[in-house]
Length: 67
Image (cartoon, rainbow, N blue to C red; front, side, top):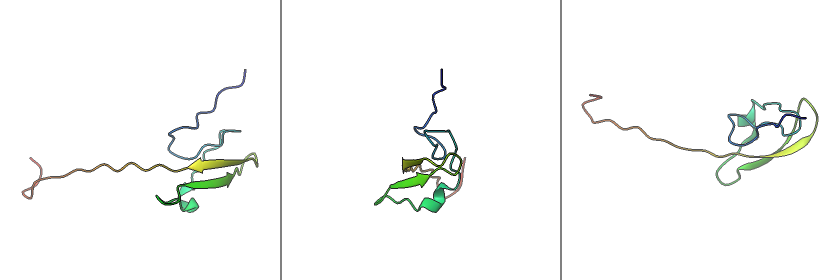
């Protein structure tokens, strides 16, 4: 049995064919207006699509600092 490659909600794009993590994802230039790209896997050579998703969280503090 072939192990399933986890490809959803990962730190880096993961090749669905061989499991390679594409750690240079920032080079893809994904934006809110264009969050999709195509990657040629540097390990196995297969092409696959990637969609970037960004979550923003906020922390606030009073003007007199953390208490």
